[in-house]
Each structure stands twice: as C-alpha cells, then as structure tokens.
Image 1 (cartoon, rainbow, N blue to C red):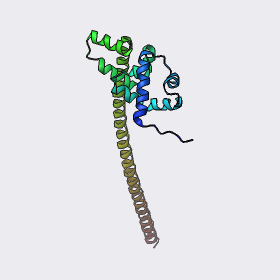
Image 2 (cartoon, rainbow, N blue to C red):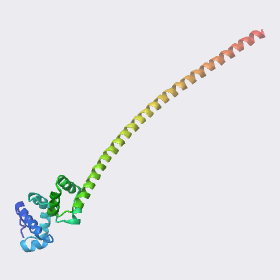
Image 3 (cartoon, helix red, strand yellow):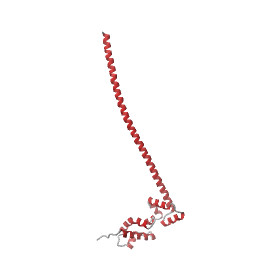
Length: 196
C-alpha cells in the first residue's frame, strides 16, 4: 500500500478548518472532526499537523493564543511565561473598555492578566537580581584571584627570605667557627709562650 503524500497547503487547510469549527464548538475533538470531514486520513496524522501548523495558522487569522490552544478561563494559566508576557504587553495601554473587550474576545479574565503582570515583574526583578548576584560573584571571584596571587607572591618572598636567613646562619656559623678556631689557636700560642 502506497502512502499518500500531503502538501503543506493541504495540511494547513485541514487544520484551519478544524480551528474555524472549534471556534463555534470549543469541545470539538480532533478525532471527531477527522471522522466527519476527512475519514480517509488517520486522525493521528491530524494531531501531528495540528502541532506543526496550529500556531502559524492562528497568527495568520489573528486568533488569540487561547483560541489557538482552545484554553479559556483557568486553563489560560497554562500559557507559557512568554505568551503571558506578550498578553500583558498587548493590554498595557488599553482603556478599561478596550481591556474588557480584549478579555471577552480572547476568553481571559482580567484578574489573570493582572496576576500575569505581577509574575512578569517578579521574573524581571529576579533576572535583575540574578544579574546583580552574578556581578557580585564575579567581583568576589576576582578578589579571591587577587588574594591568591598575593598569597603566592608572599610565599615566594617568604621562601627567598628563608633562603637568605639560612645563608646568613651558615655564614654566621662559619664565622663563629673561625672565631673559635682563632681563639683556640691564639690560646694555644699564649699557653706555649707562658710555658717557656
């Protein structure tokens, strides 16, 4: 049995139809749509096509994120942070009436958007805090590096000083030995002179 190759345009057309019908009937399952409209196509294929094309088609048709994902009300909170941030930006400068219209059109609650705004602000602050912490860590690491270099330099200086002290002790020991030898030698000759 030969597999049928479907074009990208055909796949988009099928997913567009599904999204369009689902606008009026949000509970329409893809499997049922497949059986009713395209019984010759395995419904699993439609799931794959939907994953690939649904966002692109939704954007082309100016559909809200919730319409594309078929998520309304509480389920809208399952949007990604990036999607929430986009919605917060889109609604930031709207008047009260425009804001209400936007919420109704996209199946969102005003309280959710307000909460998302707080989430976005918190995320941005955390990012700023992370940057500040990272900068502080870098500064401390540089200080530690400098201190290690100072310690290494002091160790080298200490070794040189210890070597110099050892050399001086040896010189002193040799000198002391010479002095003692000279005293003994002198004592030896003075004893002999006195003995004569």
